Length: 282
Image (cartoon, rainbow, N blue to C red; front, side, top):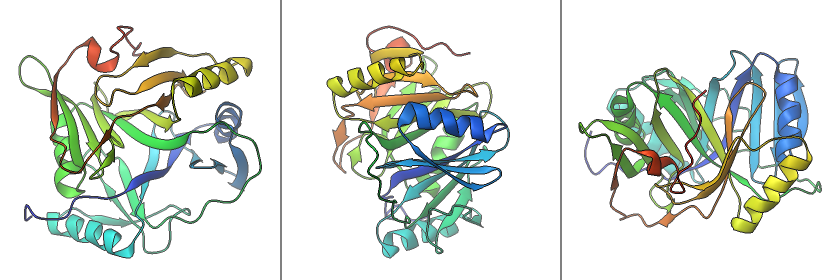
């Protein structure tokens, strides 16, 4: 594929999480993330609030049905489609009801499914909710370099930061969509292929406090944080949903320009948290 192929311009619009108990999971996200619930079928729930929405699907715990990235113009979607076809990757039909009919889906080498399309408009809501937009998605992989190459070469994501261990092996890779948010997708090391976490971006340090207070008042404990990540420099707290998935609330994520060069980090605890507190891996 030619080096001058256009880079991706998109944002994370929604995700679909599998769960063996979708109703229980939907109720958790309603409580924790101020989401309005709509039962679309016996095994499918829509959970949404301004600038954040997700689908809960009956399926295997701690797995993702798909992640969906929105593009704002038909030409941008056409460019994604052409890039995928030119790479030789297989196009699939998108399964998301929150994207318009011309959307597409592609499977990465680990089997994670990523959809692209023009988003269906959000439904209006007068329900009070703390501010937080669905912002990034992270996969765990035992083949980080291979998966990172796919997202850069086939899908057109732009690398913001790479993390290497002392042997020169790529351990983490952070991707943006041309400019703006430092990352909207990342790949982390894992001994199994899995969903690592998804993140909601709020505003500032004060908003992290407000989220922590609200979560605590509703019986949802902070499982990690507060802290500050290395790549992206964002403040964060994390909780776990009933299936054990990590859910991040973040603020002050670094903003970068299109020409921002990819950074290089040495693998170590300060990559995950500059303040030193590690994340438990269980």
